Image 1 (spheres, one colour):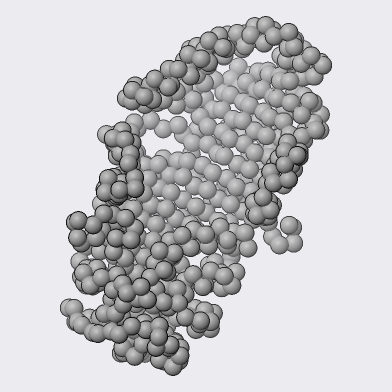
Image 2 (image 1 turned 60 degrees about the vertical axis):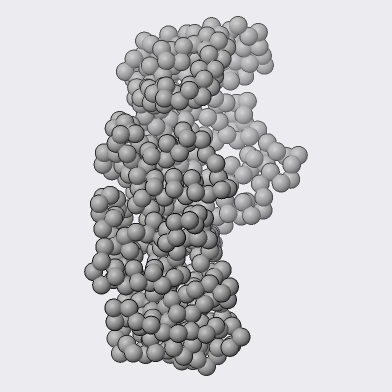
Length: 559
């Protein structure tokens, strides 16, 4: 699939070779006879000067991309296209068959953005210096491409004049793009180097001859993504000086004006690394790893055992489970205390809630939520939500059952103050269940204690739907969930998971039946091709935060 569409995006980068014409042929043919290689993400980073603010590695390996089906491919393609667009606009495109002429020798790409040399320039994207390192996995085929397609088929109207120079023994072609922007091109071993200015080219050569590189900066920040041995990297994005990059860019841009407190919040993150990989099953794996400033972030984590998943049914359509909401509440209070405006708005909504519900958020709500919490959507054909086919389940684990019961009693008293709501207690299979009924006698919600630790609440479904859940028929043992979760960190802060987008689309159609565009055709097609998606956050080490998203796709014969 990668060969069918995405290649034209990669081609616009490689198409810059056409500018070099006869001089370019010399750069290649002088090294004919040696087979090149496809460099890895870290090998690519080692070619980038350490002053670079951002680097993007893109794999051009067709076998890796072919593991994705059409939907997965399009998602990945969009990520690549965004990164290549700004570079592509500067380079010359030729009508060349990618599969035949370029794919046999192209060996991955690294694109780096460097700050402008002139201090008076603002840090707008158009002012950043650009460095592209293109791998050559077969020099002989690359030389044939130059001879047959560039020398033999070049349109002189598309090509500007060029001159040559040398730097530390490396021959460099100096020319201009169609937009009259400068472009330096050089060949070093099994790499084609392109730079938007001479100084950037010189820095790249210095780096490749032993100077400080992007890898040195990444190692100082100790930031590196880890993948399963069964996964292949498609894209890597490195921002080792994230806070400096963002603050300098925003302050220098006349188009952007942020309050001082917003700029200060950027200090929370020191470095970021993102990645997109594919595994042997064709699952798409997106990762973001952030290094946090220890002075701006608390070391508290909310790692949970995910035991609560054993009490949710295996036909769960969607779920979110997290832990230690009491700690999250404390963190929110700390954040509000540091910002006058945030504190004002926070106190405003807090007081409004407490007045309307007769509950103290700190004591009555979050104080007893010291364990896990989950909310899930499950299918149903009974209850007052039967027409929509969905209902909801919420579950808490707590070490403070008595305080939780006090809160439930206050909620029951509040409910009974409404004439259309009645509250009753019944017994189902030996379990005491509290039920809220509407004026038609339909069960709106129900809740019960599974034991002294687990509280479960259902909305829009009879309570017996969650009475007999055992580990072997729970979501924790579901094949789709366990497969996708196996590629996520085992030690995490909970999951967000969806495994049935078709049902969700049907519900949206029912809710918005009078609006034909409730789900666009494009969104409908994309969602219907996704089998499942799972997301989790984790803390691989102190003051690091990682986000993982894994997507699986339906095979063509199941759509």
